[in-house]
Image (cartoon, rainbow, N blue to C red; front, top):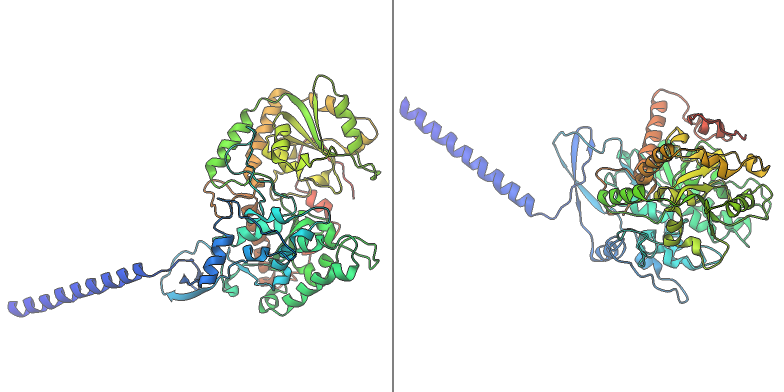
Length: 536
């Protein structure tokens, strides 16, 4: 009996060692494979995705994404036809999936984004026409470094580190697209996606035709993208209510109501299909399916420490001027208060105000060094409306640690509701524009009422806003901060998930999704001890 037991035990022992050996060989084989992991879960199943890039795709990936920040990627001079698309070919997400039956918690659950693979005419061909993106100057250099533009090489002691670029304010579409392609929860399976991104460069495309072109040309891409989207099976799932896109121009450029040839802009956002789509733009209108996100600034850090060091620097800066203004008058605009603001600044005594004249020529206000050099020495930075309610200068002042002063609630408070605190008095000053226009308010006197203690507390709030209003290196992954991109994507996902809940409850998802004249609603969450001027 004992001998029999011994023999059986030996067999079990051999079986155990055989199992261990096979498991070791299997694991070793897996480790030798060239694969990358993209976590995903669907019905409790973990997905393992392997990337297999062709030689051409590896070249495209290297030419576009690898040098995005580290070294300036030179854009070939178009002569006569641009070859920019060779540097700006976005790699396909060519992934194949193998299912492994392991139940895990999925960190990307509810966060997956699917990116439409659009025909080139809606993005890459637009970049190829970079010399004509804006009527008055060549935009080709602005496409360098993933849309950040040329690096600032002569920082003149004003800027720190290598994270500064001469970024054009209209480059948001390219910048956002680059960040999306590095988003940690991308999926090729659109059925898993919580949201669908449309990489349509609507603003760059339209910018070519805003002047001297008829409405048929201006609307061509709008009708074209609608026709393409309606044919995709992703569209039929929610008829676009899970779709979003980014526009690097103000929303009113896409809200033309009239068929008059002299009317401004395109009809894009008035088309029925785009009423079902969420738009992120540098300035929103009153419609409820539009959300403003920060203008691109000059600062695009790669690491948390880059942000922390810059915050420390601007927080400690001794500021010689009470307030400053960087801009130019708008004499052709009867409602503009810029002329009066400039007059008040120039008449201020004892160096109280510093004026950077953007009309002086030489594109001085397009220079990161010149703008930051002014704003870093001021306690308050004036931000009156210009051609529209908002200004890129608002975000230049924030990254400089300068407290913004607004003269209209639509310049910030009704716009950047995802990125700015609800209590506007913590980080900004509001002076009614009508008080400036009528001459009833002295800016010098109004700002002199703030004590040094109050100014220090407000500047601290402004400095804390810096990571929230910048667009980081697309290859970076902040550990401590969320940047403007992270915040925008998370809020889009929240919005789409709420729509899904409405559908599950059997309610009509179109109710309140895209409604005009919603300025009051956008301002409803804003609080402060100072009443806002309501203009409806």
